[in-house]
Length: 231
Ligand SMILES: Nc1ncnc2c1ncn2[C@@H]1O[C@H](COP(=O)(O)OP(=O)(O)OP(=O)(O)O)[C@@H](O)[C@H]1O
Image 1 (cartoon, rainbow, N blue to C red):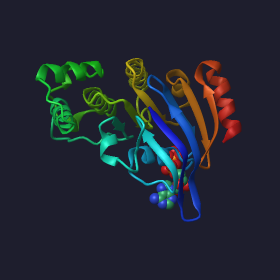
Image 2 (cartoon, rainbow, N blue to C red):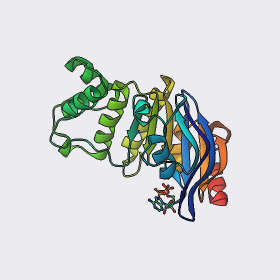
Image 3 (cartoon, rainbow, N blue to C red):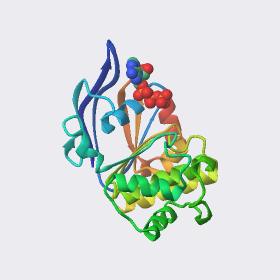
């Protein structure tokens, strides 16, 4: 579970995020929409502990991110727009390395199973990551999240630059993770995917969460007009 209470970030006189109150429970996928500069990445960075709040708090599984930055890493997996992994290691070796950093010692068979669960084709497991497409790198990122048994998954623009098939596969995989009890926060510009994959959708403008919508209560067209009216 992720929770923001009065979460605010200012840079000098500029307020990047203003009094965010939000709770995302196990099994929920919350998609955050908003124009460039709306405050989506700031929100994610506050949950990651990359930046400190000016006011308010971010917590993960009830643990304050600012007070216990190391402890929250146990619960958390993060997939940025460009997944940062080691290009000279294979997909399997990357997964082995990152899961061992998180304190897990899996057999090769178990590691292969995580990669399959994340949708990576078996023939890629032993190829160097440097030759992977963005979609394939993301699948390794997802396998790492699964191997870490992350309770919370943070995604920043996960479908940008993915082809429609990869984007569709990605949606299915994160829905499976949510069904297994992961709480997911995803910043995106992709209204269609947000409608398809999320349980709730937030629209942010100038650092303020302006609207929160249950995804099953709107069509993609209604969501788009609401978005355009709001931003
Ligand atoms: N280190 C910083 N110093 C000053 N201002 C910053 C800093 N980081 C972000 N901002 C400002 O905070 C605001 C919110 O930025 P943020 O990156 O959260 O937006 P975003 O919604 O993620 O946009 P995008 O869709 O372009 O990724 C912007 O006006 C940005 O210029």
